[in-house]
Image 1: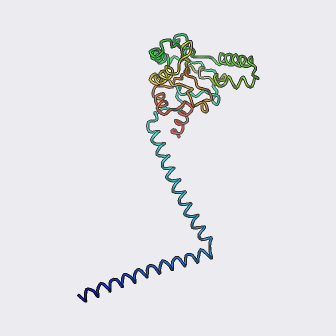
Image 2: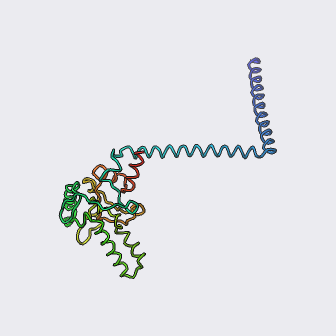
Image 3: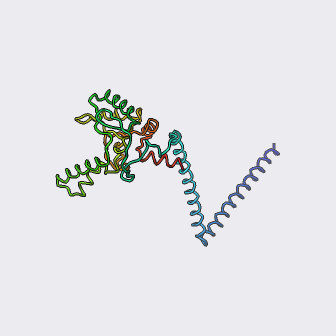
Length: 265
């Protein structure tokens, strides 16, 4: 009994000594560290700076990895096409085109590139199931015709009291400059009802368009990219596969071409 009690006392004494030793080591470490920092404060500054840099590098690495993962995910279904394909020709103020002379076919009251004539007929028929009064308003337009249209609208704005510069700026939001219009390619169509289309049927028709290879060329919220305000009547043929991808990822032609070119590098 006495022997067991003696062992317990001995163990407590040993544990106490170990605890005191650890405590003394901690105090000694703090004293030495404090002394060094007191006489060499730059060491603390450098240490904190190093920790901050490591933290920033770690955060940047995680962000880069996340963005890379997102890009890979969004590009996984990118069509295997070329940005130079005939149906993807980019025409805007930054990509002026010389006069195009496509082979044309009459569809209703307009003419379009013969390669998209059947798709245009089918798209119109589908649109008329939504809005029976839907008609094709404009198709191929030569550069000379575009220039005449542009100048007429500028003159109309000047007649309202705008200066020439103000009139040109106002017209450019709705009508492209000669050489910057897709109509000269024969790949663009304007389609609406004579009195103008309500928002709801216009949105339904825009949803149907990719099934026939067309996209709404100037959608809402993209004028900072296209340079043209929202137009619910202007459609551009790009091919079914391209149109469906653009619709799925909410891309306008400028964005889609940039994506294809990046993938081609």
